[in-house]
Image 1 (spheres, rainbow, N blue to C red):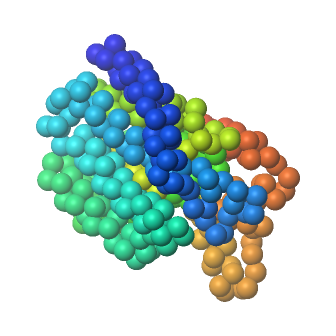
Image 2 (cartoon, rainbow, N blue to C red):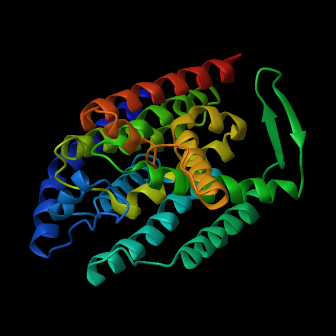
Length: 320
């Protein structure tokens, strides 16, 4: 079994290393280039010639590799929730990316339509999950489960929509979001192995392999971006894994970078609307550090380190 886990990582890594250059070349040939957000710093608006939708491979490869290495994934309810969440939110992101590219502006899916689609998927996954699992949250350290019944649906809605959009917000610099996601997945891999959830472990290792391969082409200077196809799906799958492993509270700690990024945006918007003043120089917060004189590479590496620290803290708390 451990050989299978290792191979899932290696095979996924190799597939990305071999296929990503072809995808980059193809996307360039059809001008599927990134449309930089109008709120991005001026120096980041020069990245519009970099192709987007690299998230297509990020989504498809782990799903296919997981099924090949463990066909039982198709019959395990929890694993299917993870795979469907990954694919479902990836499709939402794909539609958004496609509309943005063909319209040649940042007007893809409206915020209302995107949010509604995310809520519908979260509701579907909740309905599937409730039929085979106790609706409770685990309190770390005390290892005590609290049943919350119908309130669990609200929690799931917040987890899926919050996590997917938080990763999307963080995906603003070369290698930033993918690197942070790599560290965020490791504690859940450990939890899955300790609980003998081998199919889930295979999926996580496959995704880790994909992220390592993707980072080769995404670190500065990036040759491709994941787009909403990747960011929304990665955020959703992180929430799905936390849900099926009953680590909902730990997700807040392990995904600390994403929580921080999102809270800063919320605080900034609230402050501007209520007080007419900014709290931070710029949001998403990673841009503020560039304005303070840090290079993009330094900011990204610092966020990776911070993500690793959050993950270690979350892992330790989860193991107590």
